[in-house]
Length: 252
Image (cartoon, rainbow, N blue to C red; front, side, top):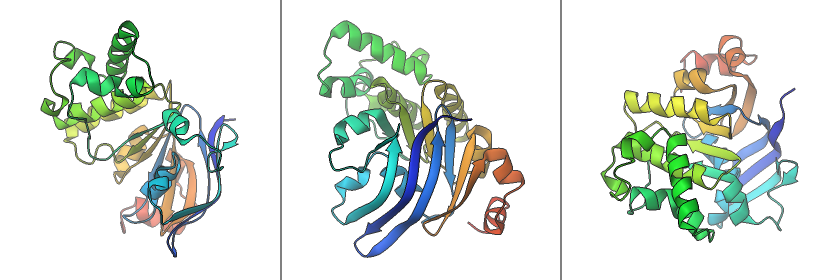
């Protein structure tokens, strides 16, 4: 039996009067990669951003239902959102390094959390860059601007930045959509290595990517969760005709 890290229960999300997510219930296991798939506009990224309360930044957003992280409802009014986002990190579709050095990018989260011990920071920078499979490429250039890195390196740097604060969950919103095939392959290898220490939830449009990296896959359509299950079963023997038509490329 898989240990459940996040338990989404009857989640509805509204932007103003428009309902964007409709009665979503989904279990996200610990130490695995869960992929959210579905056509553009189906609510994948909206659901992903709910998992660390990024919709708090939108005054029109209203969430009902529950999102349990280790059994505690993160939608509760008393939740410390800063603490939550330290536990549930985010990597965006487009690499977004800060206009700082490579080392400063990785250590940014430590420093805003008041961790300034130079030795500890240096160790964390190295460990995080190693975890992101980037250390060997940048170890002699840590004082160089992160903006000088290639797109693929920038995305791995953003993953290192997320890893540095030691989250429990890493959310990735189409992390490879802006990358070339070689960089995509490196990020996919990275995802597979990260799951030994983290639970990952990824949004992807790439059906092959979901099959290559995800242990579990959830298919969404028009704001609803159509079905979810082990990735192999979802692609080879989906229970729902809508899922079958999507994974076979009949629409999307």
